[in-house]
Image (tube, rainbow, N blue to C red; front, side, top):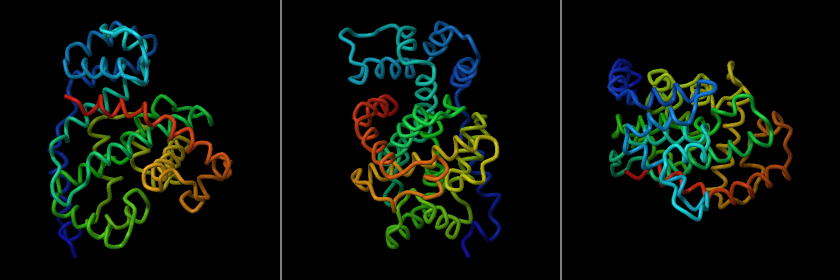
Length: 294
């Protein structure tokens, strides 16, 4: 029996309680972005208080993905070009990335691959949302980026124990982004990344749609508040796995029949989504570069 299941649940709670809150300026930015009719000038004013966020927004808007002939130097102009949804995703993801950067360790989670998968899921979720229509589409990109955030928490705050999970997964040939890995976490640790991530989402007061995606993306049928969003990110997660781990080669076995049925998708539709995801990922890499650059 491991130490987590033998009565050290309080240890888990204590360690994740010690995770810093999001910076006040980030909470203020996210709050006003969510308000209707907020002018870009107000968001620009708040972002300008944080030089790191300012540089990330400008880096992203001046990336190859937007292809402007001249340099954009105004933060307000940059926000208007990117749109509030992209700015919110950038601010939230960059702030969370910063909390956990520099914590990699031998035998632990590969953070670069983790964020690449997260980005792939976010981009796939955005593609699906545009095509299928989702009421919570404002949250879809951020939900995709953060759906697995509990893995980073476990890796950073429970290094030795999470290394055991990763080692066993490698020995068993389990992919790191499926339900079997989720169950392996529970068997080794007594907790899983979804429940830990949900605790963190509550601590950070993230929107209910994002929180529910984090908690139920491996069991979307359990979602109550935003079931369509949760199912969508669950499918986006599978698309990202195929894109990164299966070289984008379509195979029906890599997809949940329940998710395909939920959205009424067939093999042709999924192959088209994979093709679209492949096309978008090169330019989307600029977002990951913006998030991870100081």
